[in-house]
Amino acid sequence: MATSGSRRRACSNTRHGYASYLEELDAQRNAFSADQAVLQLRASLLAAHVDLYRALGGAWQPTLQ
Image (cartoon, rainbow, N blue to C red; front, side):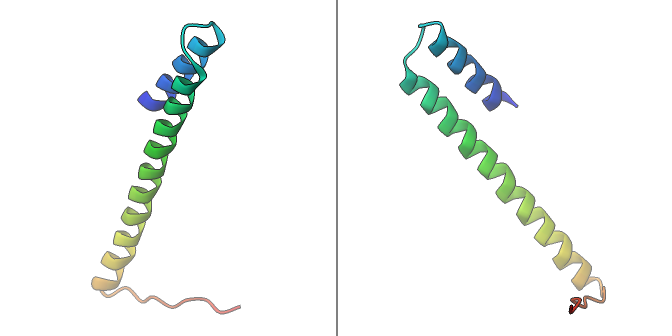
């Protein structure tokens, strides 16, 4: 993923003195934000699959333990 590459470059630049720690933190924040967006999209996709299954007449019975 592009954000993880950016995060690695920022970390490397900080270690070698080419960039400030603030730039590394900014790259980490951007990567976290992108990862969070991916997870939210995945959750929406899974919910849409359940809705489609129900709409097509799938029997949805939660298991009780």
